[in-house]
Image (cartoon, rainbow, N blue to C red; front, side, top):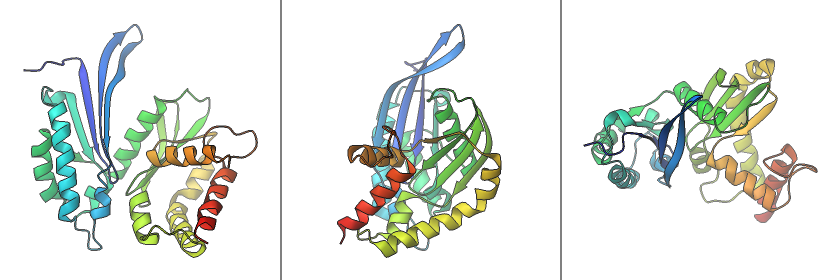
Length: 258
């Protein structure tokens, strides 16, 4: 029996973390509004268990199943129409994704959809556009995930360009900083690798242009907190991430290794 008819739930199987968000639907004169009532985040690091031949190891799969069992307990009274569960970058590329998903769906109790990169970008933009004050012009949303980064230019609630690139905090860390050391050479190699990916879209995006940039991921939030806590931002910038602030944080990380 459904005991929460006015609730909706979203489950995100990301490459770094799994998330569960529950929202309450309320009718207002302006239309239906969704208010968050619960949120869970578990650092599964599924992408960290992906081998060079694109196979998920057993340990990362077990971590994922355990988290989904806990999410499933929270969603026990929900009807399938009230829940959408999606998987992203790691499960798009893992050769044994099907094997993981069979047990994952049993643990969660609901179907799990592996979405394409552009669908992930569309959902990210929709969430970001509804979470920040409306901008008069175009805005760029950048979401740095564990296995991919989505770049979306949009206006108000409408995306104009959507791309998903294979740059992520988990796969980049594993490739360039496996021991956790950040030195000048490896940082430069990591930057060049990211630039090669971004070059694919840079011309079109620059031509379209944007006036505001939004970082929508946990990685962006962590960077902003580090930059603000250390006073690295450019003069006059008190919140968020400035170009100079990011450069100063990078130099501080490299200096800490010398």
